[in-house]
Image (cartoon, rainbow, N blue to C red; front, side, top):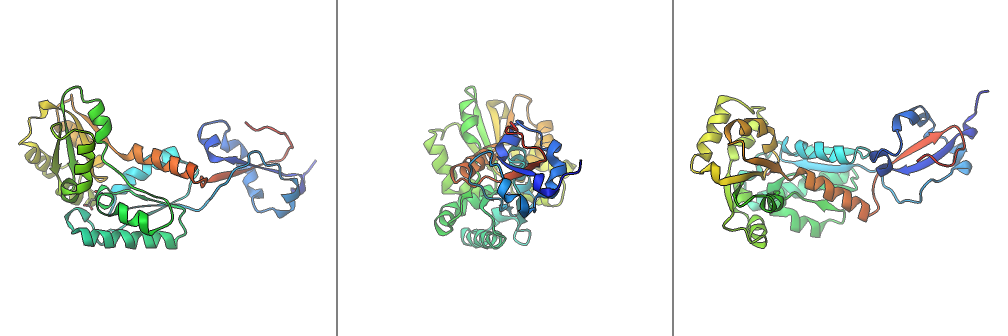
Length: 290
Ligand code: DGL
């Protein structure tokens, strides 16, 4: 017997149910065609009272670096929509003045706001270091920044030192100094600026002899056996993990802050009740889809 649209029941399930694997979205995919059907309104059975917001999340960086963060975010929040903005006209941020970076960040946020994003991730350590305080104050949507993952490195360092690799602006910035001081890690963390890695990454050059030579020369002054962690404090740097592993002693762990940002974003969306949702339809009236 064929069914009219009036027989269709709509259920709303917050996306975390799907992400956690309670239901399989694919089994309901055929019913997404009913999405726009108004005639079912009276028969709606709301599965869960929830506030939601299906506007996109804006993510930006000076270039391709933030895509390494977006990848982690999508893994954690697969049912959200995203807009990525790469400020490629102004890359590299790490060699610019604070005033310039603040202006770039404000422009990026204005652009993403014009696309009606519900939250913004500054997927750039340099921009976060310079501008996060100001922009959080000036805009009234959640803005999440990225911080080098020094804390977990210090907690697990096994009495060895921690090396932080970032852009010159991040390395010289107050924000990183405050963080290291707060963790009482002045004698434990060494910092190194590696601006050329940003240029290499933007050119798509990750494992060439030139890249290896630059890394070897830059690390020459360190006795790497004294370190147990390399913290990647620039979102362009995870693309060099394979090359770095070839050069560093096996005992050094490489970590970055992208998982931390993804987790923080999820928390912020939950706190503000603006998680995206997935609308699901079924053609029968069964009560429970969990
Ligand atoms: N990817 C950015 C960061 O995390 C910026 C690199 C740059 O533009 O210099 O710092």
